[in-house]
Length: 84
Image (tube, rainbow, N blue to C red):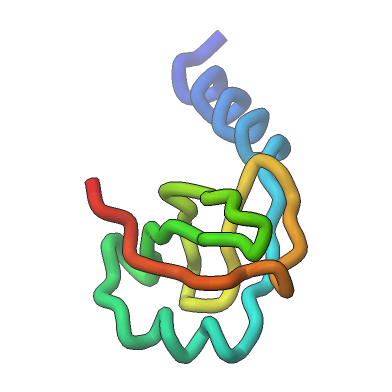
């Protein structure tokens, strides 16, 4: 099997295990004030109302995030740029 085919299958597997969640407009405005950490993306940390922190979350175009475990975007209490 070709290496390119193997890599594509592996990437597809990982993408299937992620969930895309649309972020509320109030948080989209805050994200717009953050610099990009990639082309059209940012890596952020979400603080939820429960106190749970979801760290190093990729956000695309300031509108959608990609996470392994789904959460209710209405539960976001704060968002900040992820520091490496």
